[in-house]
Image (cartoon, rainbow, N blue to C red; front, side, top):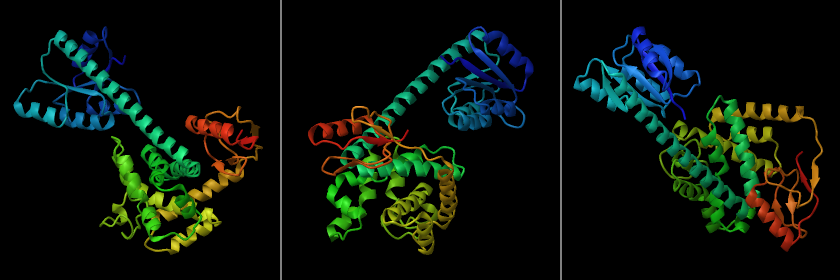
Length: 384
């Protein structure tokens, strides 16, 4: 259990008192003033509770706790003050979101009791967060499993798109890539509501009927609707909704959102999806980017510029990697986590999973079922 407490005050004697009175029951760290306190929060250590004085030079306790919340939102905040007026208390609660407001002088036993309650509150916050994260991961895994079962080709494409998105945004200096990756992985979840034959014909560039084209046009909306049902994925849903919207504001959805008002992840997704589509048609990446650069209005010029750099680095990394022969395994030897070096198909030539697909437990069950009922070509080639 995390019992670490950060005490922030501009009086060294008070901090020394915290150490004496609390060190038997808590792991106490002290900081002399707000700037030293913020520095302590930035060094990577996780504190269960922050106790801050109200009157400190340069930054009062409320201002400090507002900044602290930005850095460590889960840490419980408490305030000690000799000024117990109503405005100070209201500011502490409404702006600093404090859990307890204590007045000086505060008896050691009252402070210890308040800290125990604050630590219990911290444990509740962390437990709830862990449950939400597990539920969220489970929901995302369920959606990706649906894609894998419904259309392995789309699943393989989604995995490649997720990896490309992660590398792309990291090359742009983005550190938190989770939302970008999930949006890329679920970008085409809307295809699960369409007949598989329609999706395959669309991928191959075949002529589609008016009704089919309307269904294809609404893939982002359908996908966004599915994702929006999951709590905490509202941002991902919006990214997916605007993935096909042109930079000049034309296209679907038909609204007034355009340019920099479009989510940056949607603008990146627009470029990456177009590159993938052109690669399927036999175009090289550089040729695809040049064509997209000349197609004014559809793509964000800044994203196109970043794409040139990203794909140059990606190609250099691929060329520098030594060529390694794939491993041959039987269906019985194939396990979850293997990456396919070549497609897996039935003995009749039906593709079950394309090259590059990461084998999940659900996909593995599907392949085993097909192997028993229809037969699967072996050996299966996987990356070493």
